[in-house]
Length: 274
Image 1: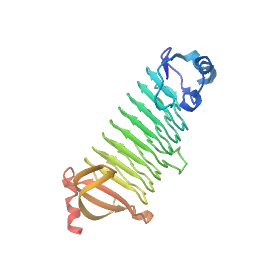
Image 2: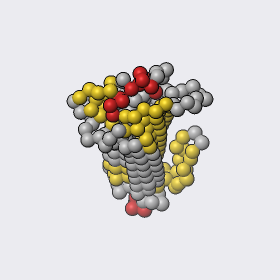
Image 3: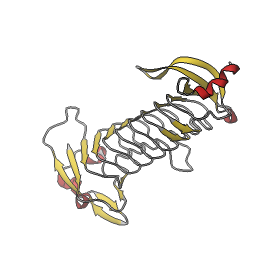
Image 4: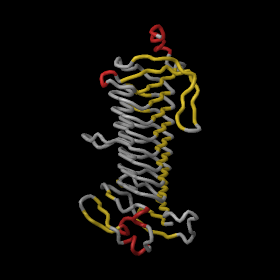
């Protein structure tokens, strides 16, 4: 197990693809210290920016464990493309956390910037704070969103969470910004509290559940029924009642948008269409 401590408060963006269990695996601390990292436009060694400490205790699973203690809000691409192991961050973390990760687990005890879990294919990201825009979403102009895995956020998230999502689960226990599930093709997004609007815009399949307030449903969705409960994932069901809307009809979509009936009395006029 390796623990990293930032040596200073970072003022410039740090590109840190090397902070990855796959890269650290079977390396000695002195080898890890020499790994390449970028601070702004200057290439440096990991030891220039972090104190590195090795714990003598062995992880029973045999997987590499990385612990980061301190604010790394300027540090980007931690855990990108990781295939296993664990990362635990005690502080805020920068953009592109766990981008395209395939397996393993990342836990953040703080906030995360944009594109956390971008295009991830497997594994688990758990964030005990707030997250910026584009949670699990691809880069602008790319249509390959989240392919699998699970993201759990205990705070609020920004806009376009789960955009272009193809598979996987996103669970948000706070509020979500606009365009949650934009152009999603499959998978599940659960928002326990409020969503700012335009949820499911251009979706063709998949499931979005809004347990709180939603100002309006896009006019390109049609009401289907009222459900007593909705399954989020295996072993987790949320009690309703929920309005079930289907859409987005502009895309000939069959996506499912569940909206809490209790928290949205202003949507009761849809019931006359049932």
